[in-house]
Length: 97
Image 1 (cartoon, rainbow, N blue to C red):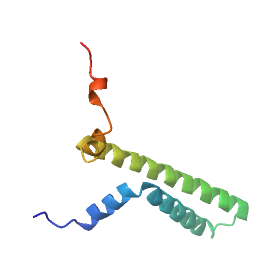
Image 2 (cartoon, helix red, strand yellow):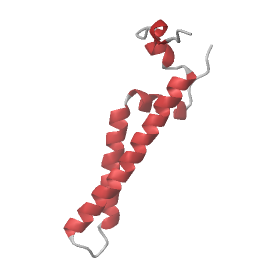
Image 3 (tube, one colour):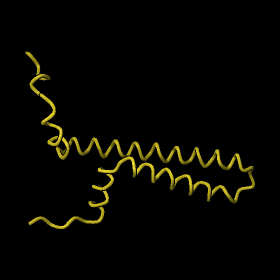
Image 4 (spheres, helix red, strand yellow):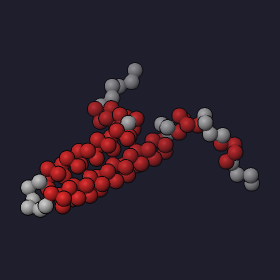
C-alpha cells in the first residue's frame, strides 16, 4: 500500500493541476498586501496604486517562473511525460543517421 500524501505533496499536486488559479490568487494576494503596505506612506493615492501594481506584477512573474519550474520538473521526472507520450509520435523525431 502507498503511504498517505503529506500536506506539502497535496498542495504541490493542487498547484500543478490549477496553475492559473494559483497564479491569480497569488496576484490578488500580492495586490492586497502591497496596498496594505503602501497605505501608511504619505504618498498620493495614484502613486500608492502604481506601486501596488508594480509589486503585484513582480510577484506574478515570480509565480509564473515557479510554475514553469514545476512543469519542467514534472516533465523531467516522467510524471507528465507518460501522460503526453501517447499523443507524440517519437519515430518522426528520431535521427536518420
